[in-house]
Length: 172
Image (cartoon, rainbow, N blue to C red; front, side, top):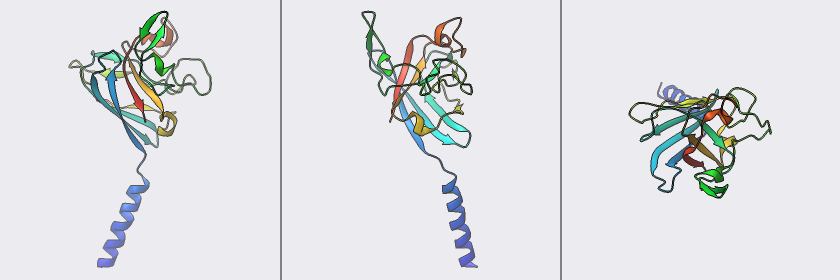
C-alpha cells in the first residue's frame, strides 16, 4: 500500500511538471528621464499562447496600447532633433514583415497585444493573452505600454492611436 501511494504521488508530480510552462518576469519603468518603477509583468507560456499578467501601479486610468517592440532597449533616442523616450526599442515586433498594425489574433505585427486596462486607482492586474506568441519569441525584446488606447487599426491615428511610449521593460 505504501509503495502504491508513493508511485501515485510520483506520477502526480510528473504530470504537474509536464504541464508547467516557461515563465519570465519583466520590471516595468516609466520611459521618461526619471524611470520610476511601476511594477512588473509576468510572462508565461500556456497552451493558448503567451499570458501577460501585470502587477502595476501609478498609471493613468483607462485603456493603453500594449506591444512587444523589436529591440531590447528602453533608452531614449533622437528623432527630429528631440530625445524621444524609449524610442531605442524600435517598432512593433514584426518578424514576418507584415508592416500592418492589427489585432493580437490577426495577421499584423506579431507584437500587437490586447489593450492593457488600468483601473481608476491606477493599477493594472488583468492578464492578457497573446495567442500567436510564445515566451521564446519575445526574449530579447522590449515590452511597451503607450499613453493612449489602441484600436488595433492604422486609422484614424497611426498604429492604433496608442501614442507616446509611457512605460517600458526589457524581456531578458
